[in-house]
Length: 344
Image (cartoon, rainbow, N blue to C red; front, side, top):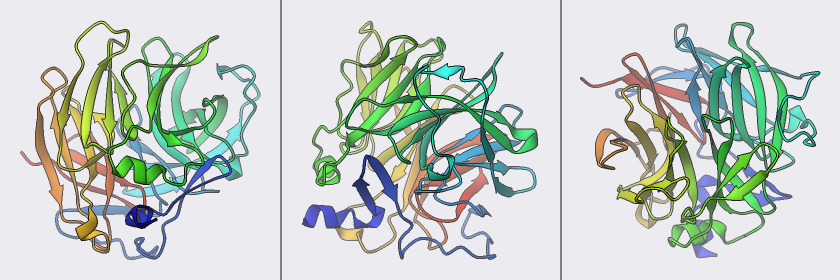
């Protein structure tokens, strides 16, 4: 029980097959006050935007909302510095994911990790969902209208508490299992560095299968290389970023960091951003601070990019993406996303 209390700051409850994240008493208060602090500026009016990703065109970010019964998705205008919920609907045609997968309750969405693709089918958003079921929900996004329509889904394997998703060039997608749904000691196991998760690969007509070599301590953020040959996976509990050959052709490699790595994102130059939190028994009741490192995907060398002490207004960053010369950050708790200039 003491180990679970250690993670009381994250306010995670696994119940009814869904992961619920509450802002709790330490969350940044929702208010009209949205002025910057330190070297960070903010866009307010979002709830627990755990993941954010650029939308093709460079103006907008799409953000998740890790809270039960949330709005599902946000659209963040990086020009006007405003955010608004995406208007969601169910498309008349089901043309992605598993054919047998029924539409979700849009009012019950609880979204986590995201991926965004663009092609002949338009701009698609893939979202890990904990609202009513553990699933990957797929939406076609219309950023100019601030709207999206649900076009398909895939239900995760039994017991899998999903975390992040990354789409392969083939249209298949990889999903991380963070821990087992219903395991009251799951966070404690991760904190102890124990293996709790894995990566599943979904393929059309075949469903999910486990990817060998991906059983880690709290599989969290994930990326697939541009050529579809490699997976990059965060092991949250053991503070590692691991490179795994998707089809067992190539050498597994990893790099250690001094924080718990959360999400992984591509930088414009082909490097990888890994962002996560500093936390431990000594700072449980304080602000944790967070960092972003830049990783060379070939050498797996990590270089510190950003290190923040954590503020009352914004702490526990989970993800970093770059638009132009600006870095944008999401967090699993609070009412805002942050941004700052990229140091030369």
